[in-house]
Image 1 (cartoon, one colour):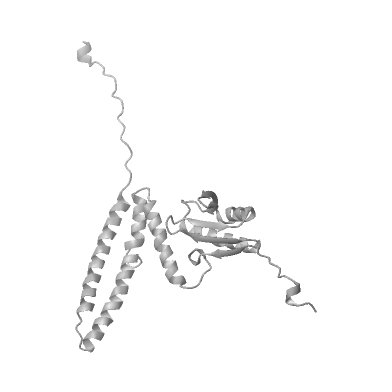
Image 2 (tube, rainbow, N blue to C red):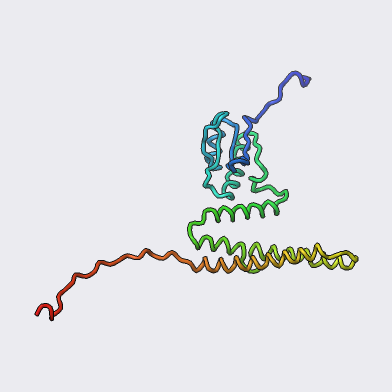
Length: 218
């Protein structure tokens, strides 16, 4: 019977690839691997080649939406794993990650909304973003107001029942009222933006040639 020293383990991992988001540029980058990994990253994840100070690497385009970045990074990671590569995928890029999923989903939603706001090409696009922010009941700000109300109302009651000064809860109520008023103002601004349309450029028609009146002809 041969001992452990008689054989070496068989490694099926071809190379190590790291897929993460660069904190400085916010680019989704992939480092490591070989030419085969490069092809998988480009095919499955939408990556492109780039020359870095420490050698070539892969990154997704600047213009790719955030959700497509995550989907591409996850698809590329799984394709690399199936091809025999060892992969580290940043958990914030993994669409299948479940830890703190609700909070991360909320952060991604805000990030997508900010991206839409930056790329808004006209007032209609701005209005759509403001609708998600301040729409009655379903907008981000009205939901935040309801959350704050659910916080300060029972808090103030507990403080009063315990004989403590309710001033912190009262100040939270004042801030909540102010936020509610701001949400209303943003809703009015949204309505104004939604009614704004790009007016077509006015063109001046050439004046008709002057014709002599019958009196002048006579």
